Length: 115
Length: 113
Picture (tube, rainbow over the protein chains, first blue to last red):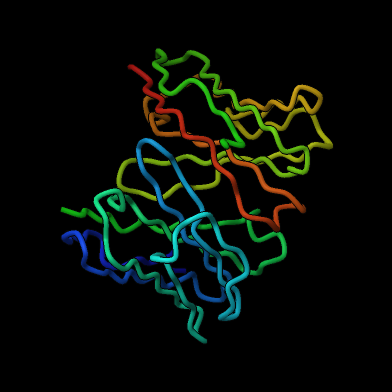
């Protein structure tokens, strides 16, 4: 069974640009969460989607947005990139939202560098 | 406000030794406490988890100890091996794991051969 797939693995952007990251969850998983990982702040929750609806949202500015498609694949978008957005963005999937966070499976992440 | 505080930030242990990582939480609504292990270039992977109805859970060389009154929990790695070298994150969730995970900032463990 394939794991959580995130593309691309690496991205380099400049300030002011926007970026879209993609996540394909494990087959059959319907919940997708996104996390930002930085050396200083660790793992911070961005948002979670279940059945195409945002179920939970973290404390990030509106420049960070996401969506989920009917096949459970998810994308997150960051507009007007800032230097501080440089981070590893992790996607995680779970079978269902009930007890979602009991069995989270993470992808390897997309490393975003903003120059 | 950091809801889960993890220490130490880094830890160096000799092969065969015991590695101990501690976490403290503030939110009494938390009722699910997992530990994640992350190797370089990989995403975190669930290692072991505990609920507050037990004080200890053991899986192989990994043990979680939980102190509800002190709002603390810890990970013990017995007979630490070089292959255990990774970053470890504690986390917490409420409503039986149905609410978003709040992570500690991580502990980088190095096990010397």
